Amino acid sequence: MTARRDHRVGFRDVLGRPGYPRLWTARTVSQGGDVFATVALILLVFDLTGSALGVSAVVLAEIVPVLLLAPFAGTLVDRLAPARVMIAADVLRAVLAASLVVLGDTVVGVYLVAFGLSAGAVFFNTAASSALPVLVGDDELIAANSGIWTAAVLAQIALAPLAGVLYAGLGAGAAFGVNAASFLISAAVLTGLSLPAPPAATGRRGPRGVVGAAVAGLRLLVDDRLLRRLAAGQLLAALSAGATSALLVVLAGDHLQLAPSGYGLLLAAIGVGAVLGPVVLVRLVSDPRRPAFVFGPYALRGLVDVVLATVTSLPVVLIALAVYGLSTSTGAVTFNSLLQSHVAPGTRGRVFAGFDLVWQLGRLVSLLGGGLLAAAAGIQAVYYLGGALLLLAAATGWRAQPPNSGAVRTMML
Image (cartoon, rainbow, N blue to C red; front, side, top):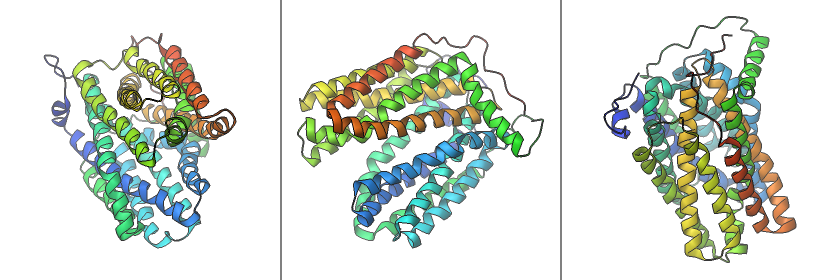
């Protein structure tokens, strides 16, 4: 499948590709529903426990399933039709979200459902990332990923306040009901998605075969030079962003001396940049294999962290955070596009799951270590360290060269 080369590929072009509108619609609807669930979960747990520790446990319940299940989710996606995996994950998550209407008054029940929702997302997101390069050409990946990313960010900006209002007015059950409905709509849309069957696999299908396939997928991240550099950059970025993102509210209060409403301004600045990033990227970039567009955003984000730790001027901070949001979104789009163009069918599921595992592991370590560092040395130290880690991530991958021989080999299992 080859994109037209006489003009810059945009979102309208990929919307004309058979199958992509269904995938885009399903992801947008389910991500919009997730906004309601995320806001409601945090508010509900805080109401039930009255502690920040209780809220932190929700984050932990969302990270642990990725660490446990990502390699096996990737193996399943590589062996089954991605659309079937996404539909099954949507149905499971719809049942879990609906159960919160009944279990929402018990903390244990909320944590268990949060765990289950995250587990379903592991399978859904891995399958969706693996399916996209089948629906569009390599030169269309930037536009296709940008469309999905932009819709998700706009949904978060527009729906998060509405989710808070819904929770306050009708309770958590209404928000979880919206989330359950979004999964069912997504599943219905995906039933019409036609994708080629995965490559034929050989070898054992029993538990040892599954484990062996998962290990082989993770090994690919080490054996392939480009994937190795991308994984190193991803880990360093996660070690930075886990703490700096979670502790932005502390930076706002302790370092910038802002009122609670000022924290909302900081988040809005990031959101504006995140929306603009893909728009700018689609106009400037069509080749996802250029390392500068993948690793350059790490350097920008690292510089922003240093600025945030150094200055206290609100206008400067808002501009810096807009740049942070822009570089985050452009980096995510080019990162995913590079992976999708570099990795062959039959291994994409395990490669994407492996990167998800790397990200969440780094994020977990960062969340734990960032709080300790802030308590011992102050919030500025967290952002200086975060900036250094991101600059190191940029340096680690900067010399990675785009592949000359096309996609990496497919592992036949």
